Length: 463
Image 1 (tube, rainbow, N blue to C red):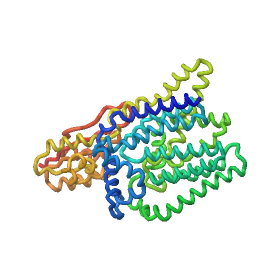
Image 2 (tube, one colour):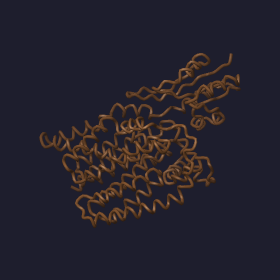
Image 3 (spheres, helix red, strand yellow):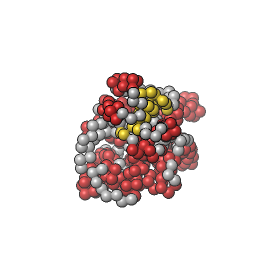
Image 4 (spheres, rainbow, N blue to C red):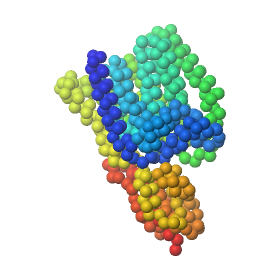
């Protein structure tokens, strides 16, 4: 049994490593990835903390930012080195899922969870992203699995480890402090435990929670004070819920719902344990948009709960199929189930779900004439690939006409670099572009899903 567990874990881990190595350094940096480089420099160089988020955020997330910055500086200033920590974290998550879930849910379900994580486009994206979400998701899953061992063995030591991992995860991203109420809840719901055993587990969880609260009060509170002041972007709850379904992929989301139903109907001894973590993921989609400028990466950090439910459903069906048709049929079913997100997976590898700022910058520099001005919605990203763009005018994508009028009033020839997708641009702004500018280039790859990541380069030549 242990040999099978180890072999499958290694096989899934190798698959995950291979998938994350493909094109790891190919795509140009997305907006947050360049920000990570700047934040890492601010942390390593010891810049003083100011009101600028660039100096505050790396202190709030020193573990994630620090690891990425160390890789970037020690292995080379390139996309591959910057993304390597995320790739390692994402691959380890897949292997950890198989090994950690095997005895609790069975080999079929554990394998299915590992494969779903390995092949989910959203997990792949964060595993190839110069950001700390993959590391945060890994530490969160490790905390959950330690808590799983704690409630199954009634071990306060395992619960203490779960709490320490949650504390470590919080230094990767502060929203992972949400793990602590989950640990307290699963301690009180430990299946088959006596009241005394539950109290001991809950006491350990509460002590570590208090330590985290003390750290939060003295360390994080000064950093987060006024963090959302003046922020004019975020997600509504309906949009947040849709982004959550998209993170899983619609087929996987349906499997997760089926898994929850199968656990409840079958009275699985761990049904309330996994209900807590799935509810925590759902709560992140409903509560966080109300209190912070919500980013979908925040809920990704809690993705392990619903992914386990989805894998449980796939594995439970595999067991039933195997009982009738044999192990080969079970393997075939799992292969089909974990590849139902294939169109999105193929689309991801087409463009990395990123805008090609590198090509746009190279095009403008090759065609720019002396005296031409520059303007862009992401001058920081373009400036990474072309220093000339550091002085480019910044265009707010939500208020393009304000920027366009200023550029027209300046009376200078100007290159404009804009992002585009399936959401149509403001009609007035598009009309201005059509009448005043020439579209000189579009950088975009064909996808099989409903997303587009296009970069358009316009040229304004005053008449």
